[in-house]
Length: 374
Image 1 (cartoon, rainbow, N blue to C red):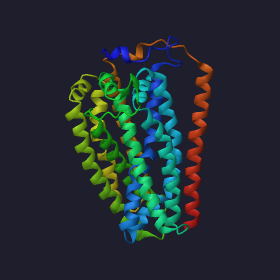
Image 2: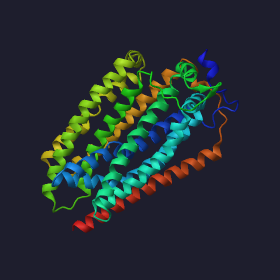
Image 3: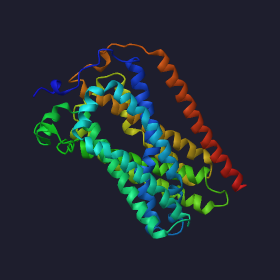
Image 4: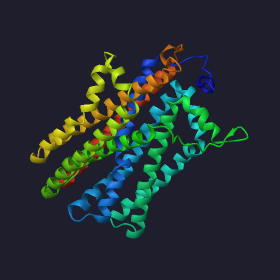
């Protein structure tokens, strides 16, 4: 069956805002979402492992991650609304059919996140001796598993969105009397597993940088021994994550998307962005290395900024690749625009206010920690 006939019909009203604006905020929103999301994607596993098997400073590292997880979840979930909103605006013809095929796993994401969110609080309370230790450990393992499953479901949904050519074969294997069961998983797609693991490797990198930031800005000044240990731990963890990033990223791009690199090199903009994306983790790695030997907080802050750059560059490259994949079926940028200025202004105002509030809350948390450490 022709994949074009399986896509939803185009909206005759067109886009409510120019396509470049949709792409800009989809990438920006995704970057803001991924930064805290990475902490609960890989950080929860690290926190639980260190809490169960770590000793001394290692256990403290795990407890500090656990302390930040409730906030990371809140920020990550709220920022996740932005890319999902713009995904539905511009990619609805492909996003909705893909998620209908896997309706039950997609619907369950909400409940799995809620269970993980609840368990994260229980685990955090247990690390502070404000709850049953054994029950808290079980909750920690449950939350870590829940977030890994959520990551897999999202990787499945996004890989299926970009592969309309696979829909008919998946539907034929997951229907009853012509009705989709909603239980399809895109197992046959060679990009699914490396994409999932690639996002996990990026989460490992971000968690390592967080450990350094936490030691620099949210740890008492008197805890110099811990700060030195955390710096070394962060650098070692980032080095491991970097090897994962290189290995899985090479598998994903050169093993399953061999067309991507040559096509990127033919595009003047991507000729710069694509190679930068590949080498970008080298900047935080170098800054963390310098930070091991220097007690200055500057290196931690620079590493945090550099890591956000790594996330943003990966978001841009991934968005370009998604557009190339869907370009076989439609020209997303060619659809008409029916500008809805009033809604656009409200969105921008609320977005600025929301980001401002988050920055203010983070600054207050750092200020409170400095007062406690004085």
